[in-house]
Image 1 (cartoon, rainbow, N blue to C red):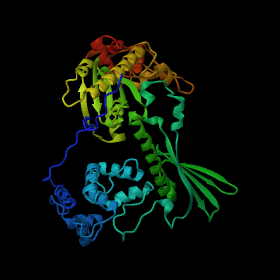
Image 2: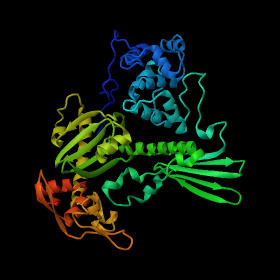
Image 3: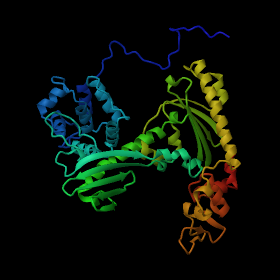
Image 4: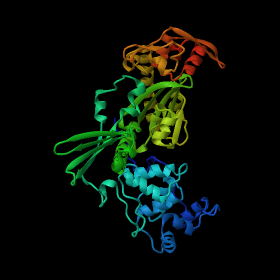
Length: 488
């Protein structure tokens, strides 16, 4: 069968593009900043920040700053524009807009560690505003140069790069332990397969103390652990510190290392947040007292479309959502966990389909038939994988939480659900490592569901199915009669 002839000028565009009208005028950088100043409170309490007051925030001479704004003497320093935006408490998107308006300067790039930290700072501005000095301090303590705003400003340096530092830097490096994931998930559980705590990063630094003829080996990680090994000709000393303050003269060095480790960890988290790196991912949990199964993949057939397909069973009802970016980790983590790790990132929902037939009918306006067929194929693939996972969970071939892999003592689930007292739990007399329940069942009283009889077996099953609280267990058992019926 012959392929259709190539029609260069009749192809459906991958994305809709809008051509600006001739009379549309792009706002100038000066007007953009002027508009943003209107929302800022001045030192006098007025809801309008003057150009002079903004210059003062930046530590720039007023006349020089005015010339930078109106392009009488434009700056070539990208950091200067970022600093102006930070002083106005603008977020990263607004800062990128300002950079484009100012002679098309490069926008912030989250793959660049320093830019990534600046994005993080800018996103925090709405809740916790920073002064330029505070931003510089945070940059320096994370091992990056301060904001380069104007030439005459004194340049701050990280502790290890200061000319007057008491010790000479020999070397520094970061280490990740992601290679441990080659051996698979230790707990054989969907709940831990993409757990944030599986990732560990540390940063190390070696300093020469020429006066005392010894070498200091500093290590800091992402879990607030700080170690100092001092090695001389005839001695070796190892210390640990609970906080960087406890380390005295080494505090700034440890803060620099901790920043390096945290940024390495963020790179791992960025990889984790994109299903494109995994081809297809699938998991399950309990959401709104119902089993929530979800699977996601990227459109590898036409990657130029930048489409991610998230298939979900919501209380047994199928749903396919088409997004511009990966949504898997937003389903996998709790809302608080996701926000604290990735921020309140927005995503573009391109389309949703409640059934395979709806998609197959091809009635969606503005979507080409080939694209609908492509989406249909992914809908079918993901639904088959979701159905297979549900069957495996029923047959106990897969577990949301594998109890026997997670706990050596099964009754430890009482501690997980915080019902040790109700089940009269006790630890063994010797080491206190093993927990056992004194009774096999207990009654729980809730206003919304009355009295519910919960057995240890209910707790075991609820744990393996991904329940997170005793309230959740009681509601489901009261409604369905048994925990297992949550798997339809």
